[in-house]
Image (cartoon, rainbow, N blue to C red; front, side, top):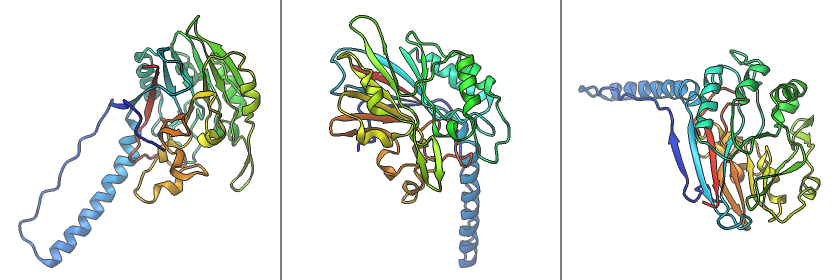
Length: 314
């Protein structure tokens, strides 16, 4: 695994300032211990404020310039990747969603892909963003080769009918085990969208997916390169070398990256192996987005909300 992509660059689009506490000139053991306890308390409070009220409200653009073996040399394609919107307050409000769309449009990519999980579903959502509202914002996304979507596990497990209707109403096509050819002469490629791998809950920690990778790739009828959209990255060991690049979300990059602890909380049976970034295994390439919104709790630490821009053949 390689989490540092070639020519990777992250652009910070918002930041927060932090101050330093003044030192106490009079030092005793009791004051040192009391001061240490106070600093720990202040640090914990500051961390809580940052993880819940600052980092989730930020936005970065993370760029990858890739030349995977399955992509023709010199053929250029730019893609804007939006994953795990999880629309809803306190962090992914309508204002934030508008900022995401405006930032994405400013990238002027050839194609925009949406990797699923469109609404917030944790119990402490402070403000709902109606389905039609977030969908209307996503409808503002523009690209010469269009905007294409897949569904995520939260879409399936919460209100699948409404999510489907919202995307259909704004004419954003949802791909489920389907492949389509895009691009002009000499620039063609296949965009393949996989059904969700955790679509049906069978019990605690047990799911049945609707993904069908063989049927999806069977629709690829030419030698042109393939880009695969898969909400969960756990499919990657089964993806053949025929696929030039796999794009995934779902993990939120770990969402709260506490050293030594966070890999256990990455929602993947592979732990940190596919948690985030540019993954290369056996010559096959995958980019896992840290996503935009939050899941379980509205907090982030060490993995700010991001839009991913991938340039192939750069």
